Length: 348
Image (tube, rainbow, N blue to C red):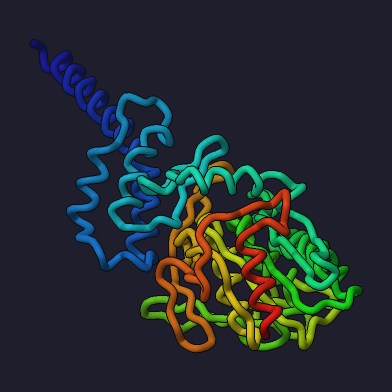
């Protein structure tokens, strides 16, 4: 072979190799970006050997898929699973991926989901037996677009929190013997909306803190109708009513998750409050959101919740009185958890 032809042949081989490397590099770009963040910031980062984990998850890349994101999905799911991060999620415009098992639910959970996605039950107030106020806190969530602008997001969060708070405050017009706050249908969402809705009950002061491994705790607090994380305002409301001196029961259930669980922890601040129901879903970590592009982002656990008594919650929130099943949202008087709440309030 002539030197010039041999050089062109070698150049072609190098070019093919380089193109192949670029293809496989592209396949790994998404996964590598996720790994880089989780290795540095996940609260579970010290649980694993990262050299071994990187090899394990890389083997799960779907190299038959042409789209880089599709290629990375099974590997990212394995990454969350190996870390033990049940709360983290990788999100595209059409798909959400978490650890194995995070989308599995029991039959009773499925029944609750039917009500959680029905506004007739998931966003309402009621007056039971002309004595007891009843308020359901729904799952309230901003869109991904609303999150991208801090001013827009705080305005939207404040508006949604005020709507819920106004609904709660409508119960203050009655001569209540007690108040039931139902978190059974609150699967999560935007924490500041949930806390903002309940400011009239929570009052000023620290609600809880987020303890980050090796970092300074973040304080979640209320001051003059506003929710703050440390000194950064998250939501502002009018805080126009009071339930001072009223007996308060909080109901939890198996799909009470994430922001709903943190709201339960915050309500431990209320003097004399009683928790009735079932242990929660077990997503009691604070997550952070990282954007890879306008259509691709992922969340991951960055801290544990710690209440005002310095109790750290690493998994579920367990109520004081356990009542299994018996949920009856169409007929509140026949709901076993509400019946237990009324029984407790009547003897106090």
